[in-house]
Amino acid sequence: MKYCPNCGAQLSDNANFCGSCGTRVDAAPQASEQPKKQKVFSMDNYRANREAQKQRLAKMKWWHWAIITIGVVMLTMMKLGA
Image 1: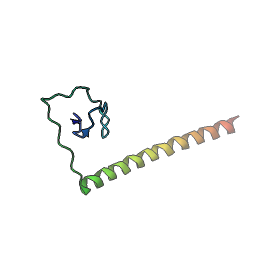
Image 2: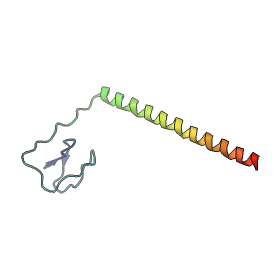
Image 3: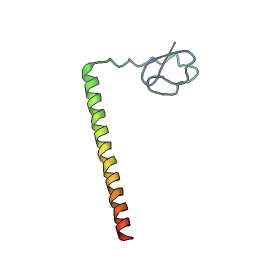
Image 4: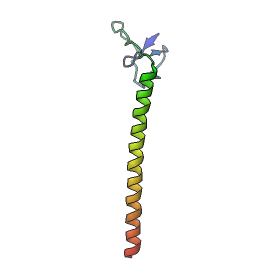
């Protein structure tokens, strides 16, 4: 059984990539390296990550609408000027 060198997730013997983090896994695992401990799930971590994700999405939505608004204003100005 192999372990991911990045996140420590358990991998199948024929895996080329980690299913958890996507890290490429070498064909021959290093015997001297021990896998990292897996992250422990807790509701506090989940809530903190979820809140950070919501803030990133809200920020992206703001930029999305700003770009659309600028585009509409520019198109309107071009139509009125022509």
